[in-house]
Structures are given as C-alpha cells and as structure tokens.
Length: 226
Image (cartoon, rainbow, N blue to C red):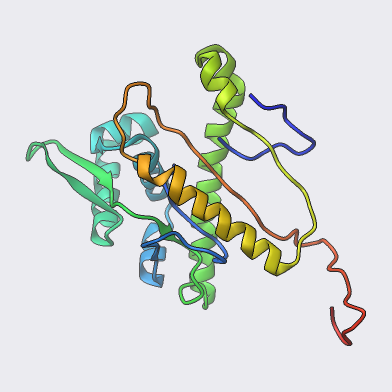
C-alpha cells in the first residue's frame, strides 16, 4: 500500500455512481430528477443501491442478512427503487419466490443543476451523498484495519490511499476532472462486469473540489470581488 500522506483519505466501483458538482460526466450519465432523488434519499435505499453497485446481484433476503435488516424491509425498498429505474430484476435468475436484483447499468448524477435548483432537491441530494460517504468510509476503514491480514501482498501493494493538496483555478480543476473521468472510462468501466480469474470488487473514489473556507487569490487586473 502507498504511504499515507499528510491527509490521506482517498479510496482504492466502480460503481460508477455519483457526481456532485458536475464539471464532467461519464458517457450515458443519468441525471436523477427531483422525484427520483427524493425516492433514493432514504438511508437503507442508498445502502441497497451501494451494495448492489459494489458486490453485484442479491436477493432481498441476502441483502437483509448483509445489512442487518428484515427481508420485508429490503423487499419493500427494492420495489421502490425499481419504480424509479434504479434497480431491476436479474433476467433469467431466481424464481417467483426468490427474486434476484441488480443495479440498473449506467452511472447516475445526484447533483444535476436542474434537480438541485430547489431546496427540496438540494436536501435530497445532500442526504444521498452523506449516506454514500458513510458507506465509503466504512469500506475504507475495513481496508485500512483488515487489509494487511486479509489481502495478499499483491492486492495490498496495488491499492492506494492518498490525498493531494494544491491550488488551481476553476478552469484547471475542471480540466483535471474531465481528464480523470476519461481515464475512468478507459481503464475501469470496461471491466465492470468481468469474471476473469482473480478479479474482485474494487472501489475507486476521485474527489476534487475547492476548499470552502480557503481564500481565492485576487486578480490585480480586475476590480470588485475576486
């Protein structure tokens, strides 16, 4: 594993799941509308959505066991997610009594300008994002705490947990995000469903955002607010 630097917190999905901000989008990115955002903005639904994203298909009872919930609860929330096209039944798998569910293919954007133009949209998007971050922190914690004991040296050496701090203009940040997403499309998305020997779920997070309480450098050639 790479050395953890001064503020190490980046994570080794490709889900792909969510962009908050929107400088760049993946191909076929689905912008979630307000109705869908509000439908997803429930902690258990986000957990189900993330679990199907990371680990693949599950039954309602399998999800219940993994998440510590009742199968009645996971079954109900799966049906609600299905109504909004976020999950679907796995074709040709399971029975009328034991249905298998999977994430609907494609990336989703929980931060589109249209959906977050209202307080209700921003509130729903924030709730979803917070639960996703909580889920990600749990996976990162498991990796940091258990990785040395439970992973082979090859897997441990391949992973990276690092943070970079710099100063950029908005144009430079947007360019970085666009090029990062292009690398994602090239090196991660094509292998989302691979079943090659040795393949296992891998979680990748790229966070790039301006520090809210940081100072923006003044432009001496401009007047007024920098």
